[in-house]
Length: 73
Image (cartoon, rainbow, N blue to C red; front, side, top):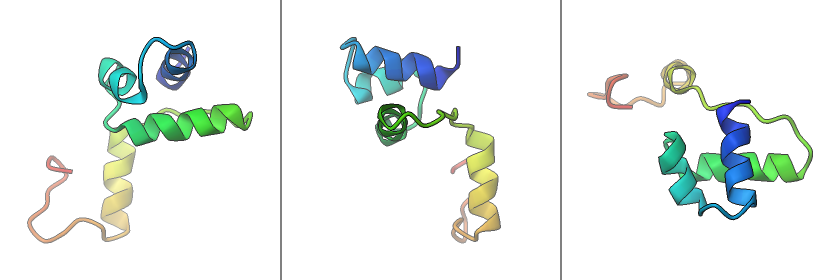
């Protein structure tokens, strides 16, 4: 089972808040988990957060500012 499924199941079953479960499973932001819950409730496919993919997507779209590095993202 994927991290997204584990974390969504934990929140839905009342094992903690989005913030607590995000911290427990190493998800960088509770808003990512909240988005997964919305998708779960809409019967949509859940996709795990892949930090490396997000870094390079931001770089490609020019969202990194002068002085930012991929490590600080």
